[in-house]
Image (cartoon, rainbow, N blue to C red; front, side, top):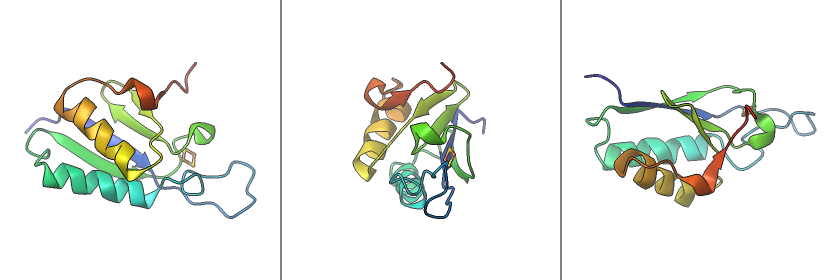
Length: 107
Ligand code: FES
């Protein structure tokens, strides 16, 4: 099976007071990754070629929580489980990136 999308979710944790902070302390991290995996599984999106992986720092901490979708290179900053659900519906099911939660870290 070829993959349609690879989704990477930053689950980096840094100590309190670290100058860069981390996606976990900004409300993201493991719980959002777990929600994404749950949605992919419940909605049978593995079969559609959508896979997810957790990752350490993606280098865009100030935009965090950080999540990126390849091959397009679309970046999101989901802050809640409901945000994950909205991205899954819009981007992976309807095929339309969700403008409301997009960020443009390269700009
Ligand atoms: S800690 Fe998540 S992008 Fe750096």
